Length: 111
Image (cartoon, rainbow, N blue to C red):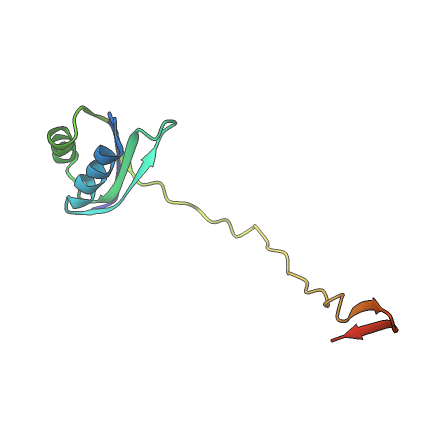
């Protein structure tokens, strides 16, 4: 089975319910990660393999409150392009090796 991403909209009114919703989402078998998405961080994105979306929504409705299934789809893989070149870093020598101080005897330096 391929990895899938399920996005659900959960109405939250407190931090306690937010933590409870994440706890319920992570407790389902096959879930690899759960995160907040959306403008107001009111949507939960659950990624994993072999997740039953109906079971997820029913458990969230039972434990937290109103839950709406937004989308179910495959996880988008990030493609790394080989054409992007990294510039080598250049180490500059330490400019101020000595510290000079002026005191009553004139200029002195310390290592």
